[in-house]
Every structure is written in C-alpha cells, then in structure tokens.
Image 1 (spheres, rainbow, N blue to C red):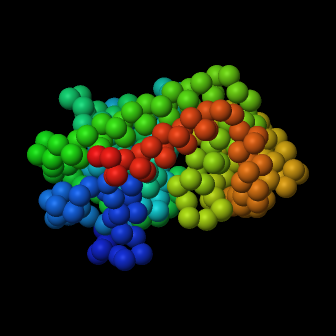
Image 2 (cartoon, rainbow, N blue to C red):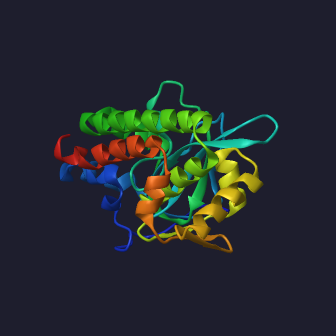
Length: 246
C-alpha cells in the first residue's frame, strides 16, 4: 500500500511532531513548501533495509517501527518513532543507505519531504541540523536500551517497555497490535508473548481482544517494566523540551 498524500488537515498539524514544533516560525516557512501531508497505513513499509530512503517522514499520529531483518526473514525491533521524531535519519549521514526496515506499526497521519529537498533544507538550516543531531542522540539511547533489554531482561519486562513506548506516542490508551506483531518486534516466539500478555491481563493491567490492547493501569505497567523504559523516556522528555533551548 502506498502513502496517500492529502491537503493540510487541522486535525493533524505539523507542530504535533516535536521536531517540527521545535523549529522557529521563520525556519518552518522555509521547510513548509516542500512538506507534504500524508496518511500512513498499518503494516506499510516506508523503506527496506539497504536502500536510501526516498523521503524523510515526520509522524504526527502514526507510529513507525524500525526493524532489523536477518537473512532468514526473522526480525527484531531496534527503535520506535512517533510524534517524537523522524524516520529516514540516515539521510543526515554521508552513507545514506538505511540498515533497517521502516514499518508502520500504528496507522495515522504525518508529513514527508523528498530526500534531496530534506538534505538541501538541512544544509541551509543550522538550527534544524542541531535539532536532528540531538534527536540522533536520543535514538542512539533508545537503540542501546533496546539491545540491553533484549539481552538482560525478561519477556514480561520487554513487553511492558514496548507497550509504554507506544502509549507515549498515542493520544489514547488503546494500542492496535497483534501478538504476531509483538513477537516480530521483540524477536521472540509468539507463545512467549501470549504468556506475558495473559499475565498482564490476569493482573488487570491490560485488556486484550482481537488485536486491540487497552491499557487499564499505566502505573502498574511502568512498575512491571525495567529501567530501560525510564532511560528512553528521559531522552524523550529532553527532546520535547529542546524547543525552549535550541
């Protein structure tokens, strides 16, 4: 499925994306002509690993999962991007091929800019370059914590961390996500995800039905998560506040 371009919609303003909100009014006016509103569909592949992204994507209500794909077709999530950031960050680097697949995990809206236009805008706009470099640091932290979590923490804790990352990027307590999607993201067997989800449901933390997870008790979810979530969350908060310091 392709991304559907649309006219600017007041229900999905560019400033819902924290990076775009951090831009000054003058900077935004320079970017706006090349910025295109789009709809993202569930399970849509924005780009495959090993290729140069055609666009930079700035989600406002959608969530994108960055997955590392193995040769045998297995996958494991390395990072999550929502209204906190941008997809296609490899365009900042001299070698612009992306090592990950970008898959839409939660359908929604956002904005995109063609790769060359994005490169040109970043080169002429030192303030936005600084914002993106700071976001890169936040992404490195998230990827590092994901690797640590996958290696040292239980599947129960990994599931809690992953659900919280989605909640932070959504406007409701409902997450559209199947157990198969979760198993692919965490890189574990589906049965392991099922066992962990049943524990949370039995404890009254979540309700799960037909691919829809409703978080009933966020604090309990945080209590059951590991320190990896708090570390990533602190970086997200820092990112949100950077518009006051950039």
